[in-house]
Length: 501
Image 1: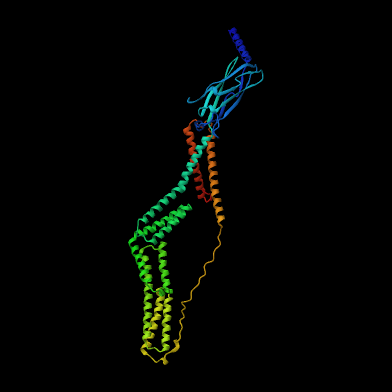
Image 2: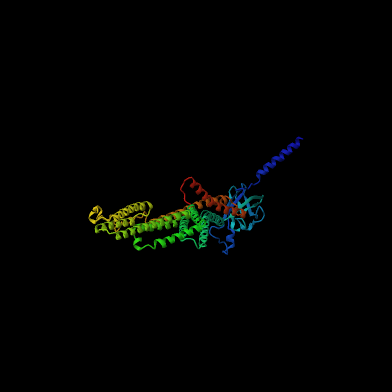
């Protein structure tokens, strides 16, 4: 029994000493991992010369150095590689495309030796992780070094997808923020104008009032003031609906207004129309149409009341003028003395001038009518008495008219105002705003897109291995970059921070 234990211990010792004596090859690094870019299908599909690619789509050629050392030395040592296969087995990098220089080396005793391993990623048929081995053959056996190659698509095509996503997001965001609102308003404006053209009896003043609101709509559209444009469009529609609701009444009242102007005012003598009173009547009549063109009449009844006031003003003027003419006739027929004839002629002329210079309202005319009636009573009393001329009270003889209708009030024109800004300053400010908006937009999108490339491309050493997922992620990020920028701007605007869009 003791003999068996002694033999076993002797064999174990011999084996241990023999293992120590065997040469040990040390390889650094123990595992080889390489990563680089491969050309995208865009460069591969173009008819470019061999080895030529689009800028930004260049393939990587990565070289790594392995250090070999052995205390006993090795002569010779042969290095070779296997094919590199992707995990799904759908693609491989052939061993012939991987260079080992030199493939046969001698490792000196107690001195390192190195070999270079070069992988040209232009030969990688697809993106992904490829695994294989580096075999080192020597007199004592074989050593296997794991070899891992990660290939991803060069940045040109990912950037194109990112930019496409940004442009798509920007276009949709701009259209949603501006184009959609503008187009909806333009459609409604066109629809309203078509309805107006379809009504041949639409009054030109009503049409002018609606068009005035539509001009404000177009101006607001030019300034991108969508809320203001919507408000003005609502007002234009309100005017159109006002016309449609009372269409027959509006037509009747407007026809009466034309008749009032043509048959009553225009038929007056030129001298009568030149009086202050009738000039005021004309101004009031013109004011009605101005108010009509600006949409100030809510209903046909209000227009009817305005025309009625014009009719009353013309009627009372005619009545007053007729009354004056009757008194003039009575004065001529009476047997007045020359002095009293002159007196009453002056009195009636003065009353006539006062009529011409009245303000066309009931209060002024009633005051004038009261004075006229009093003069009429005095004259009739005097005619009835027919007293001798020398006994007539001369206190009123030679009364001169205090009304001077020939004098004109001359109102100076308002002085011209200096422009707040010169045209070149306005143009420069406009260019500055435009340039600032463009720079701010480009910088914000560039930062967001760059962050997306770092997250989705830079941090993925095998980008392109799953094209649908990888490229769609870039497209979605680019699309969301504009949405993110828009959301940040809206949030800051709600907080009162004056950022531009």
